[in-house]
Amino acid sequence: GTGGDVKPVVQLKAFLLASKSLTADFKQVAINEAGHPTQTSFGVFYLQRPGKFRWNYQKPFKQEIVSNAGKVWFYDTDLEQVTVKKVDESLGSTPALLLSGDVALEDNYTMEEQGDDGDMQWVKLTPKSQDSSFKYVLIGFNNKTIAGMELSDNFGQLTRIYFSNVLLNPPIKPTLFEFVAPKGVDVFGD
Amino acid sequence: CSTTPELPSQPYLKSERSHLYALQQWSLEGRLALSAKQDSWSANMAWQHQVDNEQIKLSGPLGQGAVLIRLSKDQVVIDRGGKNVQTSAEPEQFIEQQLGMAVPIHSLRYWVVGLPEPGMAFFETAEGFKQGQWLIAYKEMQSVGKQIMPRKMTVMNGQLRLKVMVDEWSLNDIKAN
Image (cartoon, rainbow over all chains, first blue to last red; front, top):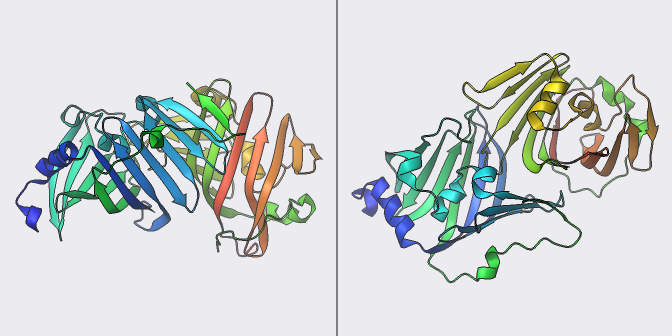
């Protein structure tokens, strides 16, 4: 592919620098240890660097994850509960956080090229800390923009994320990253 | 077999459920929210039951922070992946020490299926029953094959509240399908 000659690690860094903000749709597929897809969900993802993102699950259920000012709000509509945690405490260094640009990649991850598969170039990030909340995350590029991610949990279960309708540097209303708990919903946390 | 619920929520009816005590094998995919003075969190939950062994996997929305709890009558294993595995012969106490709050996990194995724990008194309520100092309420039920199973439930005592949403049931027992 055209991006073939540019090494994936370089692409990742260039992408993180070039995208002050980003919006995308995503499809998420959980794949169990035996390699069978178990749950599929769909949603939208908004990012504003530094440190702001919104990760909304829309189907099959509604959840909102909003990160802003060093905190993460997690709201599940069915469970009618909002938990607020400090960024490092709640999600650990998760993919969404990686993209938000707060995490210094080299300090926290070893990064390896995974080569091309078709027109996608993949970078593998392995946490340096022992008690990380996941084994590795793969970030995939398709002509210079993010196209997919794959997270392996500590038991080998994979979560694959496919991005579509990726817009780089769109204007995003700041209020989108200010979580407001609906009336009657319990809010817990610092 | 498992179906995704589109049916209106049926009421919880304890009387028609006792045959489910014979259910040897089931699994569910859903979500759990826990709130107590000390802490509150929510997680994706996958629970597999076989005879009298439970395997409960809790994880974040993207699979991060996954913890596997393997429970039998007198042993619990809390596995956070790799070498980070802890075992105890005192399940209830160990879970309380790990989570910082007492979660009635042996009873939950019955409550989540819509049944009071056998061999223990309980009092029926409009939405479920009271057992020990726990109030179990089934807010929504769903059809799974020929069975009616919980979809949304709460489990509360004075200190702790659990909310469970079951997105998908698999009743692998031929009798119960």
